[in-house]
Image 1 (cartoon, rainbow, N blue to C red):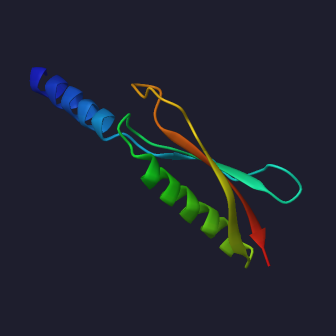
Image 2 (image 1 turned 60 degrees about the vertical axis):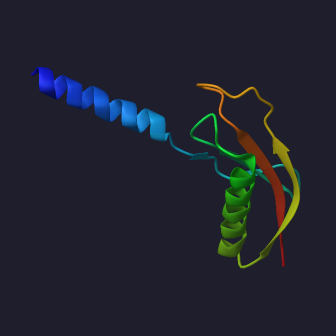
Length: 97
């Protein structure tokens, strides 16, 4: 029983340290523009990586409509980043013909 408890606690600690990345669905910003939020899974996630991944998700969203993506802006969350407040970026984009 004691070994099982240690194993479960170790597994939970590993999963917590690894973190996960969160992506929201694209939402309508205005008549033409969409907003997609992408959040890192750890306090030390680099914003450059988040931006790159957010751009990829925007590209995939537009590809489903057989259109090309046009990035308008990024809005990055401000630090300090710690447990519960992870780096986050919003990409504002449109899908053009």
